[in-house]
Length: 79
Image (cartoon, rainbow, N blue to C red; front, top):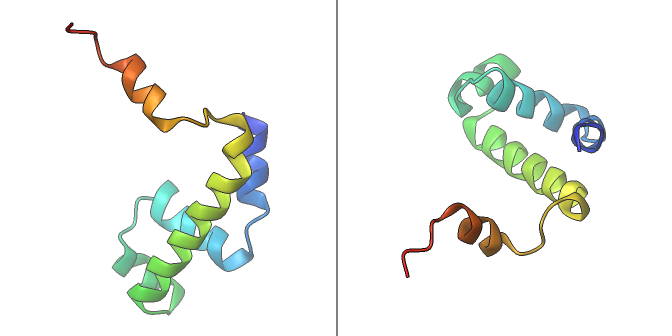
């Protein structure tokens, strides 16, 4: 999984990779990342959404296809 996630990140276009790194890895807000990159916060928002979508799509084969099953397994049965 680590190799797949690194590959998914590496395959992003440069601008999306930079946006993802600033916001997700470095913890900057969209506004702060926008200032660093010299773009609007809306552009950062769009780039982050596109990056996350691409990463999710790339990692989908490695993840459980039923998102509700993770919720079910982590919640104790109170029946």
